[in-house]
Length: 280
Image (cartoon, rainbow, N blue to C red):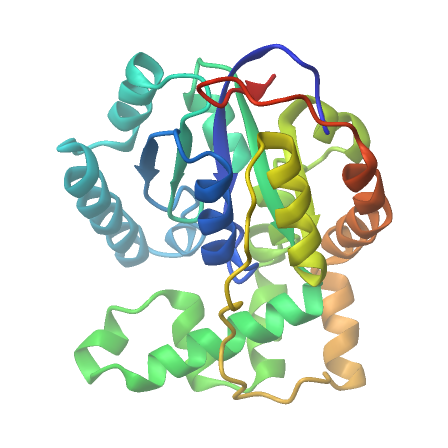
């Protein structure tokens, strides 16, 4: 178990793109069956920092999600509503949610649950998913697509990495960005303060089992959704070099998580309360 034992925290699902985020959300819902779910839109608008059109796309997405789930227009108002109405053990989920945005907008104490994926596997999956989706779009939809999807659809994998490297401040170390680790060197201290449970996609069954032990639930892992491969699964040397430049922090984070996963599995678990609460 990561963190202390005070039980007054909300539960935030950190959904890093192409890191089994759909499976993660399902596992957390099974682990906290009494918890209400509060949906947020994607919280990071990286493409939007490149153009006004991309910012408009993100604003449209946020407006749609906020109104559909909360009958509210602004994400800041959704956060305020969660602060007022959520109870300990309730789940904040939805789109791809990052820890730092939640920290800046939630006054309530919360703990996060997250999965970390091997950076090469995550990048290959991201490229394949974006490229396949872009190719299926109509001409008008392609014009309205996200910038990274446009690049993936029009260029090779190496060309896609070149684009990301040109904008490394935006797209580099994406897993660290979602987990609020930008500029933070002490991963152990950060996780102890902010993370309730973590694991790697490589070890998804163990992640689900140990989370279930903490909450008193028997969690069966469904088939892991995988993007059909449209790119070779072993990057070239040139691509590997670019991946190491782009995701140096993510490689270190993944290695740290793999190393410390056994510690998660061997911790003792307290019996659940009638309404499953989250250790602070």
